[in-house]
Length: 558
Image 1 (spheres, rainbow, N blue to C red):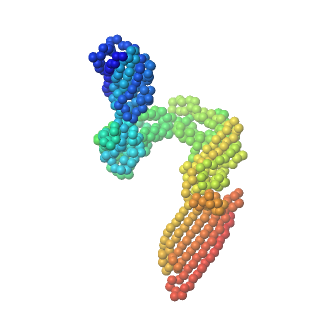
Image 2: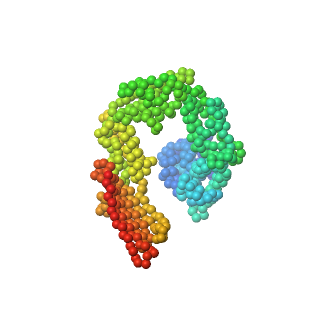
């Protein structure tokens, strides 16, 4: 068998596969690039790799033993490109090790990209380093590719841009790690520069409102002025985008429903200052003309119009209209009128039926639906407080008609307990239109509300007096003798236990204990409080020890 070594070297330059052929002229067989030939792959091997799996690499190339390929041709070029696209390799050379008849044997000589050993920050303090370590996705052993480096730069640049350092410079230097083969240390050099502040905000195209009034609508985007001591003028892209929407919301609330921002430009006025130019198209100002109702049977048109509170000639305001139809914190709304009477499936759709000049006619299309009955009430999230303590505060009971007012009142009652975070109390009606029922789930999040107090004062002739107090606001006597329920004390039944001690050595001592059951009997809000106290006083000026003991007990009912 004639053994020949034909070398095909495919060099990848600037991310594009190109090829150069080196033939051993001493061999009798050469590859004629003017006449491509068909070969069957007899073997594929990979050299130069330490961490990559040859089987996985073979799959990436798309080639396998037994495949027919054309040499020269696109088959090997495509294989090289597929390997290159993985971003794991710094160089790929392909050699034809031998040809036996119509079989060709290939060797892919690869150079792996280095892997990350560790990374270090330079130019910033420790708190900023810790914050960036949580954001960037650099893990030891990860292949250091151009994409990884670019992603790291972008994350750092975004981090500083959010803090108004828009001119931050990030330079990442790779340094070989002498302790680990094919590994690098990344030195991330950061120069955040100065904060960029807003020097001017200019509006164009506005006629209805002055620039000064429009600038006030931008809540977080403010100009730098010497007299605005407590006003931040930092530029933050995310806040700026939100403020642009607030600007349009303002126009909409004033009747300019077609107002748009035609263009906006952020430009540099100096190295650490920038300006903003916003071009507006205000459009026309619109007013309500006729408001009609369709589909309502329970309430007359005039009554619904009075509840809506919008009259002919009022400035058109879609946000205000939606608030008065669906949820009005300042008073009754049309949706509440129905839902407080059980009509959970009520729906209303305001439709602009006519737009003429500066006037708009609205048709309120109403679907009242059937009344809903409460089927099941559940509570989740109360890991400490017992279910019955939560449920006794709830006004929405199974079998009753659904009422949005009772639902909101129940949330307020739960918040007033003090056992839960009022910001996270959730109301989740789960309607079943087919059966005309609704299940209600309340979600709560426990928060600590027990109190420990330490204080001191001056007690006249007896001197300093110290006070220690302990108040348990969610105590449970029912769990008192169940050691498994002590976490660290028995709790969850809404009872109140108070212990208080005041003392000045031997001259003054006061002990008090009180216990409150807010729901005596468990059916109504009948509160029972029992208290016991003891006081000991001695006169420090008397030669003879004279002591006064005061013992007492009190019982207060509903």
